[in-house]
Image (cartoon, rainbow, N blue to C red; front, side, top):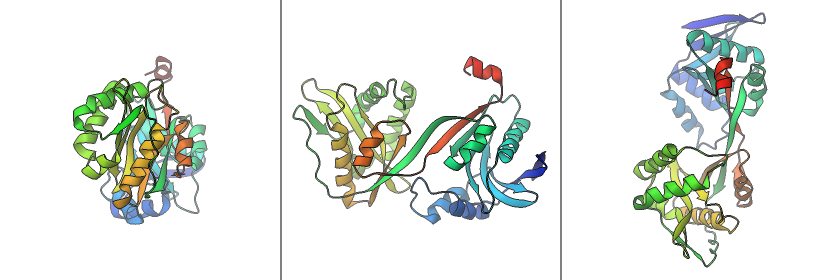
Length: 301
């Protein structure tokens, strides 16, 4: 089904895409900023995805986008076309017209070159993240200060891990609520931990107080290792604990995997450490929100 509205003397429309054709275009034209393993993997991501649409301009396919309820995501543009404010306006109007009582429209994973067009239509940035990647390697593991020891994480201490992460992220750029952290750690041990990944993971203990003060959990994402969580409690930072845990992960994973990835939020000072350890950053992807009901913005809804 095709739907269209007139915008600035040009007709834009959305046409639901065939998943196979859409997946080939997505794999080719969407930037691989998260260092996904292969073109075929990028294609496979979209083969079974609902809500994929072509953005048409005067009957010609110009771009692709994922749409669900009040959300837009993973936009890509097909050369020689460009994403413009008028297309952002059409997408915004499309969401508003088809969803009653909507207060906010979310645009996820916005590439840097598309931010200005969304911003011109009232979308504001909420958070930006980038993926970073480094080869695994047989490198020396940096020694811990003598008052600390390193243990292997286990499900038996997951409540301590949750508390540690919650304390570490208090008033932090990546702060989340207790329920979210609790579910994340539960999911890790139930679905994302294996013996080799746990061997590459770390728990740091202050031997003087027997307090858990640092954690690094390694998971598997798209067949490659990913830092699931890394946190150091305030008062124990600047002592090389994070560096120790990351070097351990790089070393331990070397016999099983070629690379290690992690995500970092823009503004997190830890990015400097990651770069010093040889992690290469990809492009930023930004989450943006457009408030369509002024009252919801003032009320903080």
